[in-house]
Length: 121
Image (cartoon, rainbow, N blue to C red; front, side):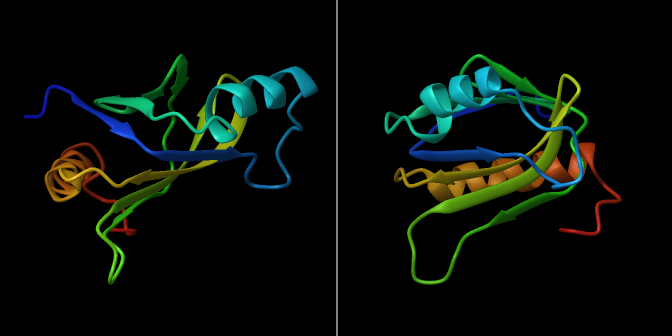
């Protein structure tokens, strides 16, 4: 059983998804942009069971999860749909560190353990 996965991601982008969900306030959009989406510094990602924390934001109620290593790139990508509070989001995470394959392995093991019936494996 995995206790926790923690790593730095070079790129993270958060947007509202699906489009028919409640709109985000300007305050929420601004905070997410300043802290995550439009901030070029590496982001701390911590995953514990069914919660993903990015910086100070906690995302739960994970829906779809995709984890991949793109062809011809030395990086790992994770895309997932979730909720934070009453709002819905789609989040893209890119890891380009030299440990990207180890992070990929840990993410795949986490997904298999906590989301065994996810058809997006």
